Image (cartoon, rainbow, N blue to C red; front, side, top):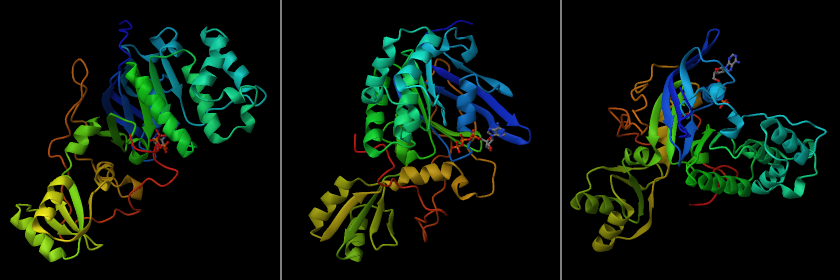
Length: 362
Ligand SMILES: Nc1ncnc2c1ncn2[C@@H]1O[C@H](COP(=O)(O)OP(=O)(O)OP(=O)(O)O)[C@@H](O)[C@H]1O
């Protein structure tokens, strides 16, 4: 085997057990260069264990993970190929940020001046002579990222990088990662919140209880969901009648008194309302669908529901030469009953709050 230079991460039939705990079970996916891939799953789903196996820090019980065709420990000078930030990175309390970076630069054989370059890249130049002991969580995240960037790596692997960042930092990180991927590099970012990375990622690998539930493009995942438009009407009954006459068959009331139209676009509904002359106070697309889908795919793990054998596991091993599998067969999952179409899952959907999400619109 030799380094094929692709920057592609391939995870094939990877499993890890810790005594009685099955942390990762027969996981397979491919992370392609040129895009940002979200690695998503609830707490304890097996994300960190998988990333640590990709990085050669945990030995798989079975299966293999490769970067550019090789297991991490066969990459030669891996820090020049893969930059990684894992959770709870520690820093020497007495070293300044610049010195911390110089120590790492020397260890991987890059010149001292690279320390100042990466400090600039992550917006920490002004803090170069400060000690990380006094840094905020967000500044420590930036310093960890700067460390990962020292070797100008082709591949970035980041475990929950948005933790501790303020909204401005999150926006900055989003733009940084997208620009990095646009250069043809590979970016794999884990998160337990879809809403946190939704604006950043193009591809997504969703795992739950250590097994793959979906991997493919976010667009494809979105497309697999029927769109839903919520309309607030002065006279909901008249609206429903007009919708039915207009050929919209899937119409439901929402608990807050609006009318939900499935499989429609905002524009279609706007046109119909304008034609029929009905008074409406709002037409909006339901943004919760993807989050709801994430919840369904992760099998209620947020709410600590009893584990059931997932319906969609391991259907799509990586295709030859990369590429992404379609959503699992039978997709989308069963619709909830008509009478209670939009039940909030126990614990509620994880909607982005003011300090969540990667900030702003694209
Ligand atoms: N060293 C270990 N020894 C024993 N069990 C472990 C070890 N590392 C992880 N586990 C277990 O493996 C499972 C997956 O953990 P992992 O940290 O990979 O999940 P995660 O998706 O990264 O979760 P989080 O989002 O909370 O970080 C958990 O049940 C965890 O307790």
